[in-house]
Image 1 (cartoon, rainbow, N blue to C red):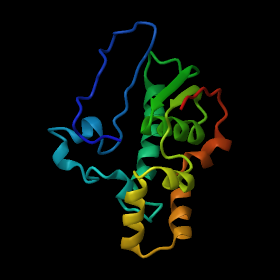
Image 2: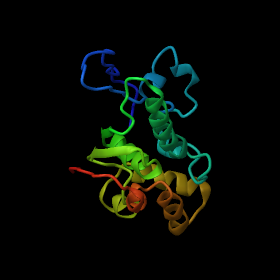
Image 3: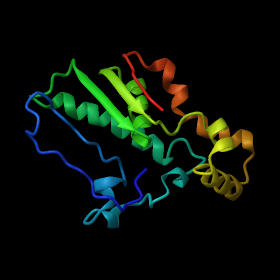
Amino acid sequence: TDGGSSTPWCMGGDDNKDWCELILSTRGQMLNNRPPYQADNIYGSNYYAYEFGDTSSHYYRGAYLDCVRAIDFLVTREKVNAKNIFAAGGSQGGSFVYAAAALDGRLRAIAPSITGHADFVDDVKIVSWPANVFEDCQEALGITDEEMFTFLSYFDVKNFASRIGCPTITNF
């Protein structure tokens, strides 16, 4: 999850002649969270809290769909073998990889790692972040634990697993 302090890495267009590579900056993060675009970032730096409680407008609904749109873009490129698209990512990027594979069957294989956004019910018992964000949102909305976890389950990548149909390798 981008805090806005690192420098985004961008490969050169022909750095690897055997591969087409794309690094995705989802809405409000990385390239979209640096000048000159930073002033237009409506999500702030706390993506978990943006429209918390509303599955139709919460940050991660759009961010997961950004991943599908990235695949849409890739398959339009002349140099891309659309039958051989592979996705990898770590932490939030690992979650994006799981979501993309579940929502779009065009990925040939995936390698998510150190995945966040998974098993929120147990996560809040063992880690303070983002549990503290969830609890603050829960209090502000006046919702029960059950309502909070029902909302979170909509974005929990463990609930996407049954929809993934490609080979997967992961690590923790």
